[in-house]
Length: 523
Image (cartoon, rainbow, N blue to C red):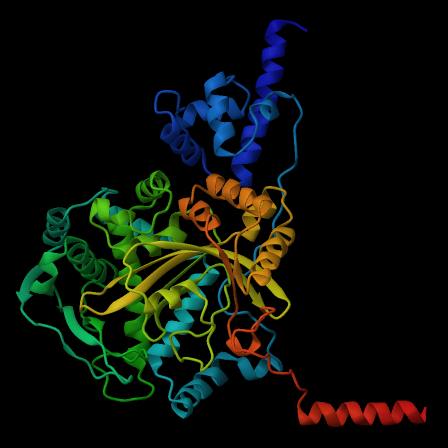
């Protein structure tokens, strides 16, 4: 074989392997180029050069092979052995959000019947229209993995993909759209809370049709919040032509999900409309301040640290919500929790089962969730945790990073972002159930929380490096915990509530079992 033919053959195998690894890990050519440049700016390839490598038109340098090997946690020799390697592993994605189920008979769930029955159901259960709308919006977000290209495009058209964007830049955009900004002064006040200790409330802003935005001067001291607030109303102008059909923007206050200016305790059609518009404008604002590709590269450079926004005057909440929208990895969740355990924001793109939601609290939530445990601490530093979640026979492995801070009204709350690690392990050809069992065994051996065994820790650190999420490695260095949705069904060997209650069958089940036994004895 001639030298030219040898180089061509080597280029073919190298390119095929690199392309296979990139696609298996959901990375674009631009993602891989950015990751390479992060490691070595001088040796990092352009997107076009990477494309030529993958198609066998160029042979990468030894240094570039080393960089790519480091990204995908492979030995350099693996790239040079002239075998095609493993085929991409197909992973079965867990559905996000609320689990679906077949509803029979189907005719009862027609649009006409539901439109008649739902308002009555909400009224009888005391569920507000806003709560119901939030539930629908969550399901919609999770089924789309929090990715809405039409809203992204609308925001990028207005903001021209500028990143980072300053307060003055946002005001210039508002002026270009014909918005008039007026300031008001209003301090926090004690809200009409439905809890024993109601939260402080702050009216941040409101909109008057056709083009007037009212902003609270309290926002001036926090550029990140001020940018978001104005961007939110820019979204209303762009998406809804500034018709004014939206609620005032408020921090703190009520925790049950009612619209703050609502008078009726039950169903209100405006609740549903305003909740949807809040979601649309909020997503638009986040996309305007963090355009998809620039924020994706920014998060990659900072390994998805949830407080990375401090460097570019973006709030932690905005950064956290952008992660599932721009990350190559789809299996995310985030929470925004207020004491004693009310969730203001919930996203479950990885289907994580919750002990409670933003509609009600349960009496026996698991106390070992990082987000809820942090509510009772005083630390304001981010903290990572690896958790084995047991829900009946279902076992899952999550890593999250949580941080405690204050909202615009001065109320303490905890924000948390996390990922399901099992699909990432499976993608790398690792038996996820085996890793989960290793960690769970260690936790049970130590009373429910324990060190992660060396082999499992090595696998977690490898996956953290491939996903480029720094807090997975941080969490792997700490004790892991077994968590569950409800303490009464705690899966730990040493039950959280003491002696585990016996799982007795219901009286009807006992009667049916007795009848079966009697009939079987006769036969």
